[in-house]
Length: 477
Image (cartoon, rainbow, N blue to C red; front, top):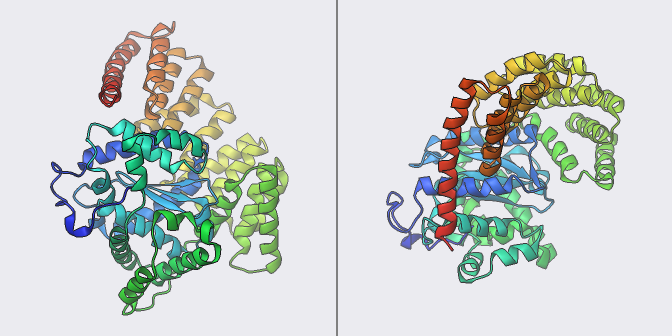
């Protein structure tokens, strides 16, 4: 996140031939960064959490469609395992949220205020403006520099090495959004919150707590303040903008507290971390707060499952869900499938996943769980039929391709196994590995004439993509 120029000096948003990145190049840069970020151990590839963040983020964007702007951004929201209180926007509409920030938000309006603010940065093309002075054919080193800045918390030495040199240091010095961009993102964020039906005072409350933290801890101010400069004037400006807003109480989505509990467990899955999470949830249970009880028991069930105690996890989950389980949330249904699988009750897992996917047809996480349950139960023919349909309908899911490869392997279909693995690697950005898998598929004894034709076409496509990558890399040296 590189500091933009003052607002009066910004280029025309519609002029992509001048100093800012074009929307296509901006998206391409974001995808490059995400390819590497997904390999980071702290990237949370957790379907329930991802689905919740994307559901909340998409509802905000849909409430104000013009937020997508001329570029018609396809926004994507994800979580990062980190106790630091932070969130960030990447080029092209990718928005990350630290688990620490999710835990710090006291209600859904506060979380919505942060997502709306980050959406504002993307919508106003602050990132494109900030990095637009770099040559547009310099995406790979630029992606590396931005990624290094994001991952400096994990390995400062590696980040420093990536940022060495005049270009890297210049970008590092500009990584924070400036105050002008922050005020603009505040304004857009408030409009999004209003249209989405959220309590706009949530932005003031959340930023006010951040400012108090900064005063209390000085040198250890929340990371969000270091990447999003916060001033008394900004808070006053937000307050002035909402003074005439009619108070509107927003009822939190039932999954909000469940996802906070899930984030607390996933933030630190070490033995000590799980014990601390369990102690926190146990304290909530003892307080007998009706609003917090289901989430606390959900959290305890998830801890028990991570500790390998599936029977205790089942008992706690039953308490969390209560007597009317049929009306539970997708998050509860998903955990029920996890618990059945953890207890090796594979037929139960298939039944639960089948019921859940019919009740929650839009949940890609539950769809993946159904495929996994079929595999675990040894129902390979059903798994192949189901997963083949899934990869045809949703072509960008590497996880589904990996499951399909496992199903083919169980059937002894080697060529199809390697072809599915090739697709999963390609979707993850690993084109050389994908080409290796296609070579194995070509040599498989069961590769048909039709398979060979598909392999030929796919190889040509992937080699062209790889050539483009190599040109990018050599062009910046």
